[in-house]
Length: 175
Image (cartoon, rainbow, N blue to C red):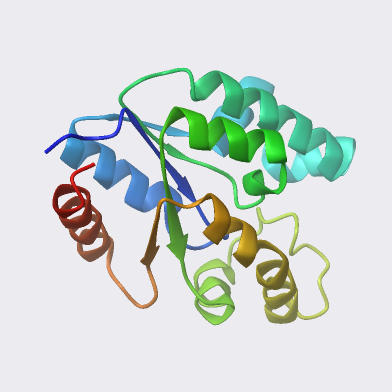
């Protein structure tokens, strides 16, 4: 099997990008990176704090710089933030440097997975978090699909099942 030099995971919050990314990287013998974790490591604060002090625009600028830097590595599986695809520069960077997999799940599944997570700044203060997730998905779904080389559902599935499907599809599609 010929494998892509890099695999970039995109998709909404709660789709499983970090969890699946770790296991996929291990299965492929790649290094796992997470853009949100890298931003937090470098700034010393969580994403919510960055949103609070710099706003979404400030966070997106940091995200763009991190993605550009991390995408220069080879042999990585990179979990991106849910909104990373909003930037045309990020989409171009990901498409040029690796194979993009969109991990899809419904807003209802996202809500079930993120309901107790207080580190989701786009949901902070939302009167109805599920409605907010639906709104975000309506905006981003076409962009996720546009940038993706492969779409994989994580809806009501375990991590091992998703990783197995990705590996099988990478092999059968001769990538």
